[in-house]
Structure formats: structure tokens, C-alpha cells
Amino acid sequence: MPLKSMTGSGEASARSGIAAVRVHVRSVNGKGLRSQISLPDALSELSGLVEARIAKAFDRGTVDVRVQTAGLPDSEIRRIDRKTLSRYLAAWRAAAGADARPHPALFALPGVVRTERPPRPPAPIARRLLAAALEDALARLDGMRRREGARLERANVRSLRRISALVTQAQAEAPKAAAEAEQHLRKRMADILGPVADPALAAREAALVAQKGDVAEELERLESHIAQTATALRVAGPQGRRIDFLAQEILRESSTLGAKALSRTLADLAREIRLEAERIREQAQNVE
Image 1 (tube, helix red, strand yellow):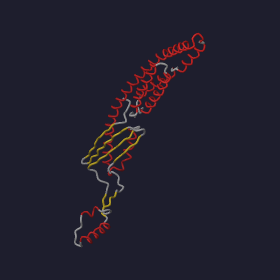
Image 2 (cartoon, rainbow, N blue to C red):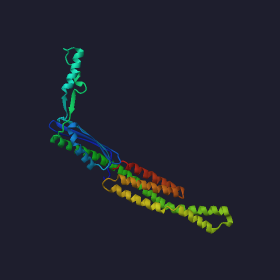
Image 3 (cartoon, one colour):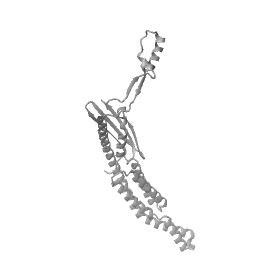
């Protein structure tokens, strides 16, 4: 199916001997594309590789990538600061006695153990494992996004067909509503003015009412928006923004249709069109 949801998750692992990399990718709605990547220190220099792959796989959304490793060398090196340790040891013996044995807690004091992260590139095996696990996790996530996108597409198609049927009903109702409104106006003028009623005045007033209640343009634009939305639902690639825009246009035209309606039936049809357009727009918030 052409539509993809922005929501999904995928997890995969890659292993070689004792070395293993596990990748979990999760995506949620977002107006633009934003990635959050968590890598262990041994793979920290590969964040650019992950970001580039995310940018290729997603058009928009918030993407969270979590990576765990096992059996890979740690890039951190921990060193003991002997000068700092000597000062703590001197203070300890001054308090506990010259012959007091050093307490293990001395190594937990500030500044005794320093952590260094030398600029060391990850091993080639780490790069291969990360790339393989990431690719597999993204493929699983993509499958979930496609399945959810298919569900969203079916829901949107149902709403669009309903809107099309409502517009057809409105096209049949509009002339009848205008004729009934004109007849009602002429009757009221006759009832109020009686024999002195001016036929020319009645005609002008009837024409004014018909002009204010003319919804032909709104119905034509609704037909155009329906056709464009149907095309967007069939075209492959990111269509969420376009579907959202078209749903807003349908909402705008249906609101105008309701405001100009000359009958209760036409107003009810406009309200039903708005409800279906709101459903489409709500679904579009989750379409890439």
C-alpha cells in the first residue's frame, strides 16, 4: 500500500562470534524529522552512519534508536590518579593511624579514578554488526508502518466515498432548496403586503436570496478536492501533508456550504461532510 504510518517499532540483532549488536528503533508522529540516537561508547563515532540511514528511511516523524552491544571492546579507559590517592591516603592514616590499612572506599572518592575516552575508531566488525542490525530493525519497523498505513488508507477511502455521496446529494438538494426558498419568500410577501405587493420587488428579493444561497462553486471545489485526495491516497511516497491540506480545504468548503444552505437538509449534508473531513484529517496526522 502506498501510505505509511509514522508510528511503528522494530528490533533486530547481529552477531559474529562473541560480539553482538542489538538495535531497537521506534518512531512516532512529528511535523518534521527528528532523531534521538543512543549508542554505547564503543560505537559512539558511528552516530553519523545511523543518522544518515534514518534520514533515508523517513520523511518526517520522531525516530528513537537504542543500541546495545556485547563482546565489543570498551572505548573507556580508567586510570588511577596516584597523587590524589596519596593525599587521601595520608589523611586516612592521620585519622586512623599510621599502620591503618587503606580502605577500598578511597577509590570511590572524587578524582581518584579518572575515565578517559581516547579517539579510537570502532573495530570494523562493530561497524558491520551495527549496519546489519540497524537495517533489519528498520525493515521490521517499515513493515509495521506499511500495515498501519494500509489501515489508515482504508479508513480514509471510506470517509472519502461518504463525502462524495454527500456532495452528490447536496447537488440534488441545492436547486430544490433554492426553489422552495423563493416560493416561501413570495408567499410571505404576499401575506404581508396583500394586493399591493409589487411583483418586481418580489422578483428582486427572490433573486437576491438565490444569489446568497448559490453553492455551485462550493460543490465544484468539493468535487475537485475529493478527486485530489483520492489521487493522494493512491500515489506512492509521503502524502500525509497533502492529505491534511486537502482535508482542511474540504472542511473550509463544507463550512461555507453550511453557512449558505437554504434548507435544513442541505445544512445537515454540509455538517456530515465536515465530520468525515475531520476524520480524514485526524488520520492524516499519522501518515508520513
